Length: 65
Image 1: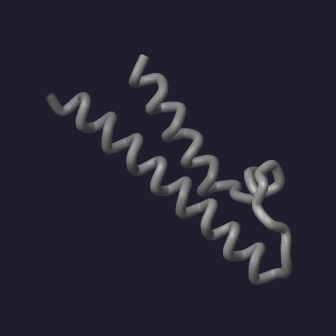
Image 2: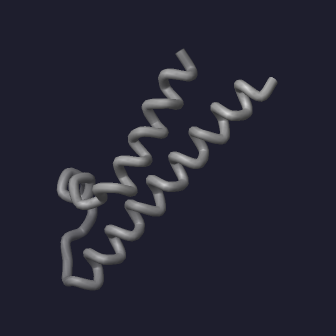
Image 3: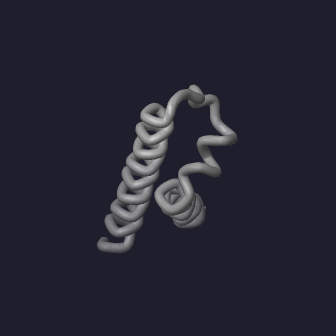
């Protein structure tokens, strides 16, 4: 069960990195000028990368032992 959840979160993080605009449209992020949009896009991608790295690290640690 834990592996399934971690794979889901890893895939969700990768989707954030690949297509941040899809998540920005469906979230409560403030809509603003061009600079704000770029910062929001970068923030969504960074959050997705962190989520993916964490999920992969936990999976690796589980299977390492």
